[in-house]
Image 1 (cartoon, rainbow, N blue to C red):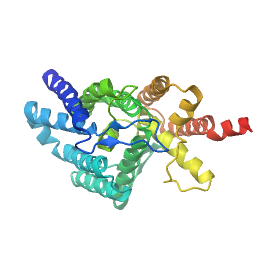
Image 2 (cartoon, rainbow, N blue to C red):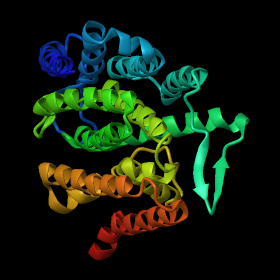
Image 3 (tube, rainbow, N blue to C red):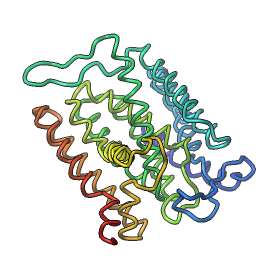
Image 4 (tube, rainbow, N blue to C red):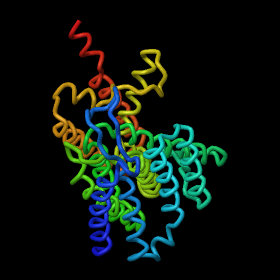
Length: 332
């Protein structure tokens, strides 16, 4: 395992270095627009190094494991292909959803799906069989998009993803689940290597090849974790991207705008506007997710109705705290 992780780390560093050199030739460049937080052209597509490093090192050092979970890594690669395509050619959201749909279908064909919402007042809330696949697809697509939206500051999505995956790794160790230990460990290592290049000021962005791949990886870990812990506790383990997406959609609806309309009203935009410090903002958000992860880990066997109420309270608090309109009212 040590040799495998070391191989992933070194390969990621090498590939990202090469991607930076060849970015313009491969059309892997991010040109700033009105929604961007950067002002210069920056290479993107570092997610290519994430998935390539992990898969190649598994082929070399742990082929038996890769065979055992071929459907999991196959689903990741399917979404990864959509991300690479988008980094190079800019595809539509519908095309991305189609790739996520196919990946979910592959997982579902192997019995990998969300089948329960937890136990409430002594009754397990099982999903009807006809609703299992749509709900699983909604959950995977929703979180994958949520993590993609969080990729707005140098190092933010990668550091938050590391914190989330460390929590799943801890669960994997406790419950002796090989997928819950190996999958997060591999991507934690590749993300640590990526942070060397992505820490502010970033030399390269992960792009959709990275954010979409990480989104589906964390979604798979979350579904696997529900085999052992309360589903509500999983909400805390992946809380920050979810809260950010819920809050942004709520705010857009309050303004009578489309929930799909892009803007700069995410939580990290609000906090950055307040402090004007990228590194400080990223560290604070990583600490926030660390607190959520600790809560989720502690609540893994707790009373689910109370845990759900607690998550609802947190959503309301964050909705109130990260309200861009407060700044405009104050100026008025």
